[in-house]
Structures are given as C-alpha cells and as structure tokens.
Length: 174
Image (cartoon, rainbow, N blue to C red; front, side, top):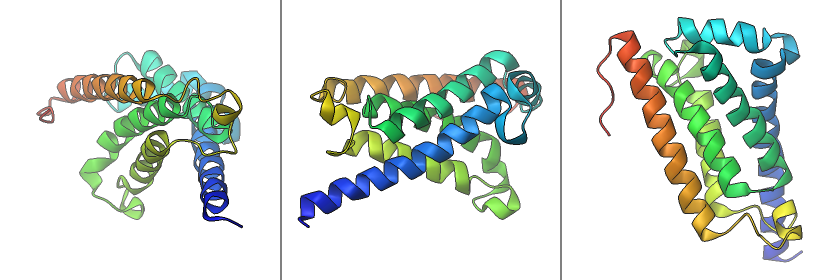
C-alpha cells in the first residue's frame, strides 16, 4: 500500500470518527436522539448557559454539529463542514473553559479536541475516498477554505461575545 493510499485511508477514518461523534451530538440537540431533550430542551439549556435567544443558539449549534459532522463523514464540502463544526465547538469551549482543560472536571477537553480535529480536516481536505473527490473538489477549493473559516470565526466570535455580555463577563479579546 502506497503512502498516498495510507494517507487517504487515515483521512477517511478520521473523518468518519470525528464526523460521527459531531453528528450524534448535533442530533441530540436537534431531534432529541440518544436520550436528550431535542430542540426545546436544548434551547432551555442554552438560555441557562447565557446564549440568547436560546432556540436560535440551539438550532445553530445543532446544525453546526450535525450538519458539519455529516458532511465531514461524507467528505463533502469539507472546508465548510470543518469550519462550521469548529465554530460550533468554539461556543462549547467558551462554556467549559472556566472549569479548565480536563473533561473530568467539566473542562473543555472534549469540545476542544472535536473542534480542533474538525478544523484540521477542513484545512487538510478530505482525501481521495470522499464525495469531494467524486465531484471534482467543486466545494473543496482554496477560496472555500478562506471564506468558510473567516465566516465561522466571525460568527463564533460574535456568539461568544454576546454570551459573555449576557453573563456580565469581560468578552475575550479579538
């Protein structure tokens, strides 16, 4: 097996694993799958965490996770999928950051790793075993990478700053 084949198989495995975990978390938020409260329950939780309006925040987080995760797993529109998932995870990191790094203490370890991995996949590209490859990489162009990550960064920054303002916190620099 060539190095290129191994790289493409590795990207496939990473996309499938990361995309599946992200999709499952988003499906909890949107549909109540896997034992969670769906959009209404998530909206209430988002309000309690300082995201307002809660329903819009729940929908955005759910779509970023489920949509970004599904697209990552398929390797379709990989830059946009990675950027969307990373942006959603930035919001989750902002909630968990006060508890420190480790998940066992309620920290940001898990959402941080998911966001970092999604971003890396969006930047690296999907590999040969992907729908982007099948479509001639129409949605995996350098301009898509730049536009998707810029839009995600702007949106995540706005959401995090708005949450910080509602919480009476000092917004992060940026």
